[in-house]
Image (cartoon, rainbow, N blue to C red; front, side):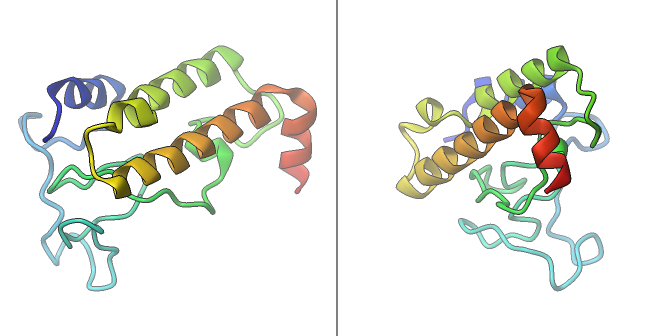
Length: 143
């Protein structure tokens, strides 16, 4: 179910949560690590489900999690909240995220993950287009 290519991309991009030896994902189900109010994965019910930081996948079952529609475009694209944006870094981040969450990579997954992938991809596309153009970036900053 979990594609080795995706795991490798997650590791290279720094988005794969690693354990001490860097071989296995962190176990986020311990109540001491995540409080009782922690979000749960829609698929397995494990703690640490919906997005926190750059985690797009459940650390336990590796299911794609729903996007956070309130997430700031600057944090999503790993940019400082400023009018000045490194467009090369922005483009690299855009390509990195699309390699992880593009709907084409979820054709063999559940319909729920396909839907989440489309939503993630739309959010990333909107963030990229908004932050790439100076006028839309400025308008986004003041809104």
